[in-house]
Length: 77
Image (cartoon, rainbow, N blue to C red; front, top):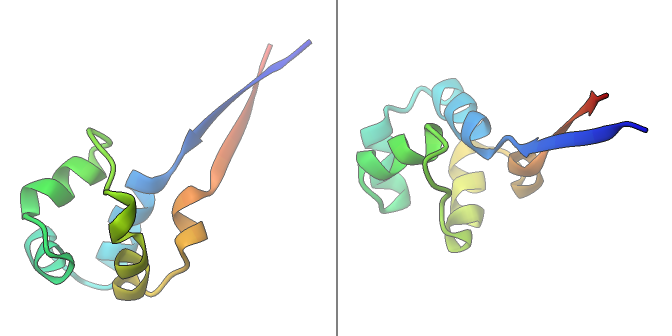
């Protein structure tokens, strides 16, 4: 029997899309309405953005909200 480990990749996706759009954490935070420190915490997986920010995040980063929630499934024996 194998179990599956999954993780939400929101922190990696925010960082990936932010860099792809050539935005600093400070600039990105200003566009969203949060501090650069908040963006840093999101990208370091210390905390997640409030759900209310997701439509704005997706619009600014030119992606779909679903893109933040891709799940990596890893088989573990």
